[in-house]
Image 1 (spheres, rainbow, N blue to C red):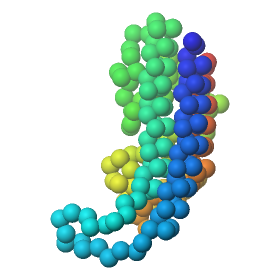
Image 2: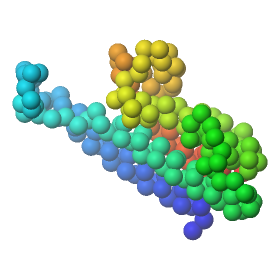
Image 3: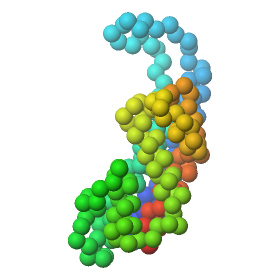
Image 4: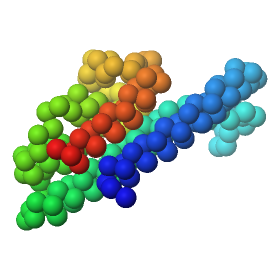
Length: 187
């Protein structure tokens, strides 16, 4: 199976999975609305809550999955171009501000690919990276000095310091991931 077909298969599987997760999310949010209001003893060593919600984990998990897909495939694409062009350096030899930038730099500056047509997709993936990292390293809370930066991301808003993910950001990120990865194979 060609590399592009494998990427397409993974993206389609993730699309199907996300549709099912959105149904689960709707059910969980409906349960959240019906959950009893409880008083909590915040000095207790263990939770006394009767109801435990999970709806707030669904969308961040989707973003983690998309970023993992990108991270895996961009490394595979770098290896593909290394073999195809008989390049001496591997993608890990090229440094950048972050892994996504380093891989993009490898593909464009070292392997010589023209990815200018997918610059919007690269920007979306960089925004995805920022949001994903904020969930991974900050529990979804944006430091006050970065609030303006995050508020400017289409499909992301803030509730206090906490990131709110719109459905459109998830679907857009998945589509841009597919577009960028496919283009990187063919460029």
